[in-house]
Length: 149
Image 1: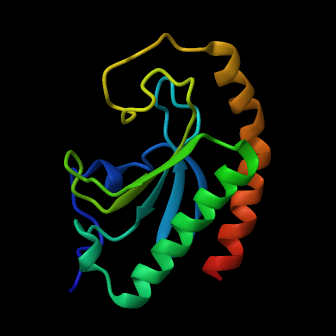
Image 2: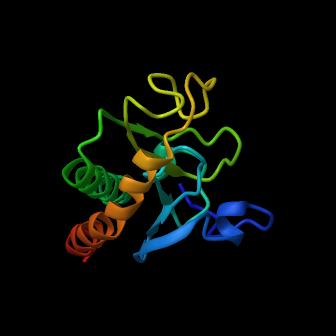
């Protein structure tokens, strides 16, 4: 299927979508600013396509390798309770994968990151994760550069 490279008015075409971590020819990885979820990343496909099935087989492989590199870096560096990986796109129909390290102390765990709040945020634990992110992101960049070259 032929993709429109960019669509005016699409927030993921018009803006990075968060703090840019890595940019390759076909995708970028960003850190999303989501309150109470310090290790929330997105792999954003650059061409404006809505669905996973819109990608050619080699592009699906490239995209999944990027998702895998982000997940592995978060698991290795943060030892989360669980990883959440999803491609929803209900609000923004531009293909992007959420890759989120979840912890049993986060405000919404075990529900989704958008579920009802079950407990108060733990600023000290969130700060600990945030302090680890630069090291995790360096590892992530190294893995992404190796896989996308």
